Image 1 (cartoon, rainbow, N blue to C red):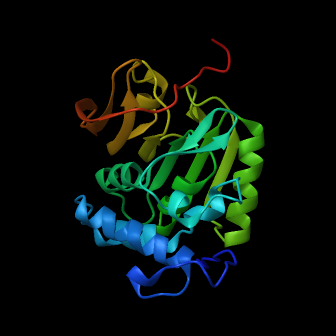
Image 2 (cartoon, rainbow, N blue to C red; image 1 turned 30 degrees about the vertical axis):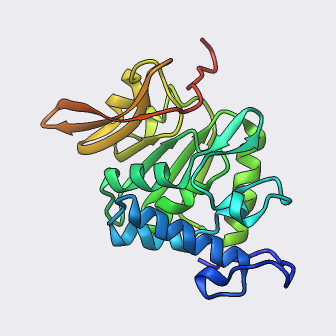
Image 3 (tube, rainbow, N blue to C red; image 1 turned 90 degrees about the vertical axis):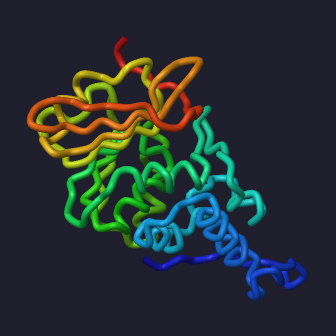
Length: 230
C-alpha cells in the first residue's frame, strides 16, 4: 500500500539513517529497533515497514520521533495505539497465513488492522467507539486497504453469526477470556489476548481437536475491555 509521509521542514535532521525525510528516517529507526528486540519474521517486518503509523495518529502536530518511538500514543477518547514492539510481537505470535479470516477486537484507529491486511488476512475489526470506527475507516480507505471490514459493536460478543475465525487478536484487556470468543475460534486456530486487571499478561490460546490450550506470555498494559451492556 502507498505510504504517504507528511511534508516537513528541510531543517529537520535525519542524517543517522541516510535519508533527508525525517518521517521515513524515524520509520526506519523503528524497524531497526524491532529487529534488535527480536522481531525476526520477515513478513511481519515487511508489513511494519509498509504501513505509515503516522497516518493513524489523530494529532497531526506530533513529531516523527514521537510517532515512531517505541511507546503507546493517545488517539483520543481515553484510547491508545499500542507501542510498535507489542503490535509486531502480537502479530508474529499470531502466525498468520494469507487468506486467514481474522477477528480483531478493539480495532481502535485501524493501525493493527492494516498490519494484518498487509500479511494477506481477511480482517474484520470490532470497535465499541463509533467515532474511532469512522476515523479508522477514513484512514484505511485513503491508504487503499480493501480487505478490512470495521464494525461498531461489542467485542465481548464478537461475531457469533460469522464463526469460525482462523485467528483472533484482542487489543484490550478482559479480566478473563470471554467464552464467546473461544467459541468463535476455529479448530486449529489461534487467539492472542491480554488478560487481567491490575496485572495483565498476553495469553496465547490454541484450539486443538476441540480443546483449548493456553499459556501466559509477556506482561503488558492495555486499556480494559468494556462490555456494551454489562
